[in-house]
Length: 301
Image 1: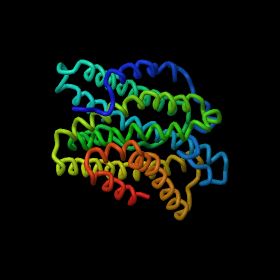
Image 2: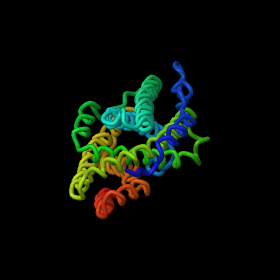
Image 3: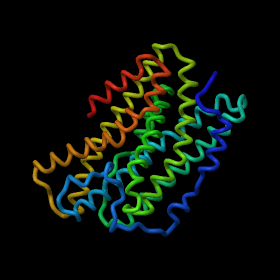
Image 4: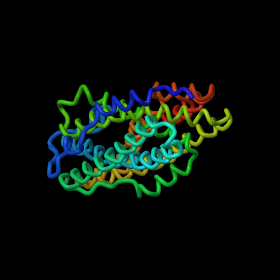
């Protein structure tokens, strides 16, 4: 079948984009906690008046970012390996490309774990994180393969938006964190194209009704993650109160949670669900697929 991207060209571009974890964060390196870690769109500055508290909140959100993206990487890795296996001997370039994809995702899992460990070692205040990752990964991978592939596509194009949000502010951010956003996207750019091929391959084996069932499976994963993001907002509130050593008023806590959930939805859900490349893949799968996802996205705004 015809796929959107050539596997041979993807192998070549992946080799040019490749980097090592030590290039970004050598063992023993530390972060500069005098600077924000996340750019304005990922952690807005208009939510608090006190600049010290605002910086702490930005860094707490950066810790959550490391955990959430790291969790997403953990379900991508086994999914890609499972997809590569059935036709491993039939198409050498496809197999090479997918095995390279899986290897880089394994590296990303390690990358986000190292960044988080470095953060925890330097921040000085315990920060909560959703989990255990194994439970969420197991529930996601229980969905039909095309539904999971759509979530993978969502996650990969989402990181493009995260880097673009960072690019204009990169010089003002903690330099190692800015490097994380840039280099992560450099490899995910190749993965997004590989996953576009995976989506097309899986969709070609299904009837129209089955495709729509898989779109619904993707939306179930979105709702699962939405519940996890709601819990992360609560954990971030607890972390923030520990960091500033005061408890917010009941009204202040409610406002904090509302803002954090809305921002989490924008950063981790809507940025993928509304990405033009994701919508284009949905249109190619089925005439009604894009509309279903756009309708679901509207309920999260």
